[in-house]
Image (cartoon, rainbow, N blue to C red; front, side, top):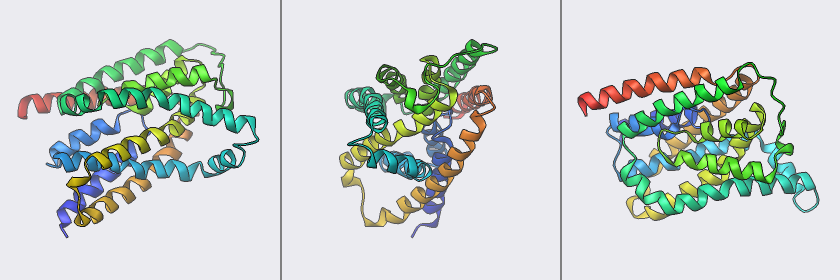
Length: 272
């Protein structure tokens, strides 16, 4: 057992879980960290996708009561049926566009330089969106998850598709897109969590199946460590973000993106 490899897996797992549901791009952070840790070969790239399952499990655990209630009421409860329909509609754009552009994106956009640029641009977009809402008494068309319409879900789904560009942030695109389309900050955040479940399950399953020849039984400890650390870190992050959005906007994340992206850009332009 390679202890250094397990340590790298633990670091990447923590990083994935801590950043997956924050508007700062987990994929972007993993690409940069993988490059610095020399863990950026084909197996490493698939590992970064697979450990997202740990983060997704954290969301399922945190919202287990809601998911169980939806499952129990799927055949008889209108709210449960609408919720599932909205998640499915929101999932479709990323699923279709992901299949079309997956290979191109992984080949041409998975680099620290592209990530840095996307982080910086995304940071300024967050500031612009927050300024749009600043000081306004906004009347939300969808104050809760149950108020979201299928059309709003579709719009959020297209916003989520922007996150196929590494460094954009899936959660950032869905939360801020949701706010622009009439969702309250809390409803947009929670809908982003639920949208992540089918999107990341599909992405992880596709990557594992496509690259199954790369793996052997010796890789199980590496994946187990990354998975467990991602679950623990994501569980903490989800709880923290829900409390945070109750009283704060996302400007702090925007400034972080701009500073971090600038540091990454300078570093890799100078030393890469």
